Image (cartoon, rainbow, N blue to C red; front, top):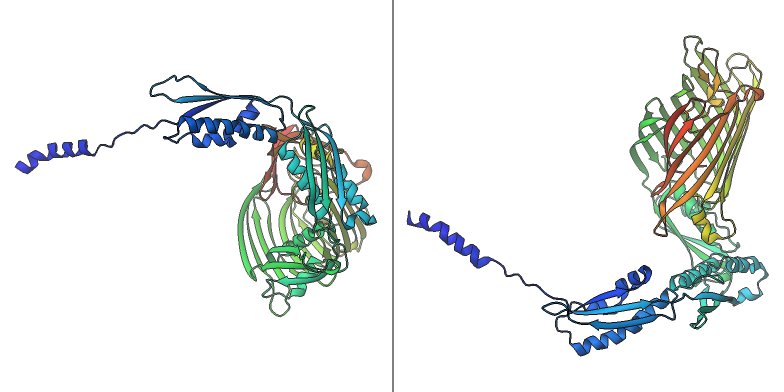
Length: 600
């Protein structure tokens, strides 16, 4: 009983003994900076004096020494912003609190910023006498970013030098270095005279290809896919394309290419390091789009089928109204990157107002060099169009020989902002169920990005661009020939005419239903403009657009349907995300569209 009665007081006493003491520390001084926002932000981040604020034993004599050094440090920091004649005053204010805290006030009037008055770019080394390098020299000079009249800053100066050196190293002169770099500042006239020298070093040509990292695949596959011919001039863009081909092939998870600068410049070694993809992999996915709704996918890849060493890809996809399963066999590439392809596909999808089940068998020969693709193939098509209240079920079959040729001349194949693409398809064949009706098929696709500031590459990124898109297609056959629906055309959706449902623009039947047609004409005009915040480019862009398309069974019957709208673009890690709100003029309806990635 006695122990219990004393427990409360003992605990209370223990709590009082354990209470920590609160120690309030005072800074050695406070610094007030009076300057324009740009200058104050720079000084608050980088002024050396601020490192000593928390020193408790900082003497007055030491503080005075630091104050003198701070004025010189301020002058040096302002020079990085192009201010070379500033007025700087640093003084100690009277004590205003107890305990006393010394207050320093730094006042800065930056003055007029210096501007570039003259630029002299010189080239030393073999490039001086190299007639082939004239265009490269002119490009470096014309794209020099720190031009006369521009405000001089250290960041702009460093950026201009790096850009010029990268441009020289990107083609032939891989070992180029910076020579004399001088920015002669005249504080009185607020002007800068720039002298900049590039040392080219020797011109490099491609020699042998050294491959490392292969385990299951032959090194010759790497050389064929890379396709960097010996004896050609070195170009960084060629190695970048070779890297894209290696990764896009599916055989490798990663690839890196580097020119050995220590090797003979007349036959330099290109070192290729790869990491092979797994021989087999299964990828399960889930996604969504405004065209087809939610979807789940399963894809199995075998990179070396036993017995034939071809790659096999089998894919199953199930969406809201679409189901598809297919398999493709691809041979290893030959010396010119040509590959044999065989493919089978079965699909059920809505086309216009009808549900269509289709089968397709293809055998062909393909050459895909990322920016140029050629494809010859034979194809069998069979489609069954479901019956409606006024139309019977229709089965159609055809065989055809086809050729496609695609040019991709975009500045970037993932986030294009300049350049063009053109795709042409030619085919001819015959129906095979019932009367044999011959037919011809033609498709042309075109896409062009036009920067709004063509003259200055430094400002074109902020000025935005116009995207022009067009497509024309035709199937020429006897009027009553029965062709598979998959050989004809529909339009509408996030990648064609926004404001309309997916594949809803087609030929109108007497009962009001829509079916695929033999002729297609489509065009689009889109304005894209980057969004700038705090004078910095963001990952977002705004867009406004007009789309139009027409589908008919004769050219004279083509009548366009128009969609207009606005949207946003986001540079996601896996490609551009497109969000658009469009109004379909013909259907008088708003529709939201979403699309991820860029393909052509």
